[in-house]
Image 1: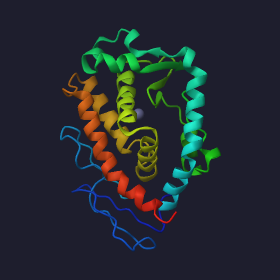
Image 2: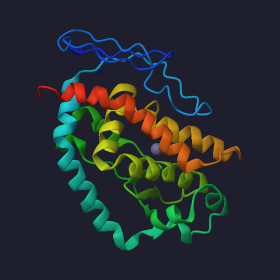
Image 3: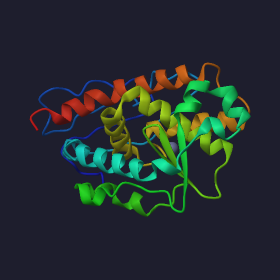
Image 4: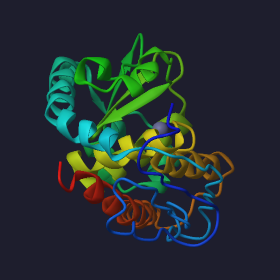
Length: 238
Ligand SMILES: [Zn+2]
């Protein structure tokens, strides 16, 4: 689905993202360094995928942002009375990893089915298949929604990583970076998910990194520094 568009973004597993050459909007622009090069070394996220995509997808995603934001806000409002702060759940290992302030701010809601925004209604049919996926959890801002019966401490950890990512980037930049990652790599290989899964695995292995929140913030900034030029380049002349 992503092959054959006007602007080609090529990634490999060496080096850093390079600037898209100017004047190549109608031609191929090669990016020979990976999406993630500056993350802390223990987060060994290696991008093997070679992808092509076109800036038009990013422009449509950008146009859809107000609708996505509005849907998220309404969804959060509709579930606010069922949200519990993570600090009340008694997860001692989470308390050892994350600061109390975060656990008191982050909220969780158990749901029959984890929602995904109706992106097909927002002019983003490329992402519509995700609406059919049964996710264990999803995070919107500082609140995450978990599938009933699958509320392990590890999934709480995973979603808390996303809470920190949302806080670090802000709503619009998180959505843009997440959408770009989905479009370029698919769900499992998207950089913000790879970070969450990699850290979750370290948590499950009993070896989460010290200074976890700072590590997430640094890695998130690194992702944004790689994504922003691509997004800006796509929006030029839109
Ligand atoms: Zn995730």
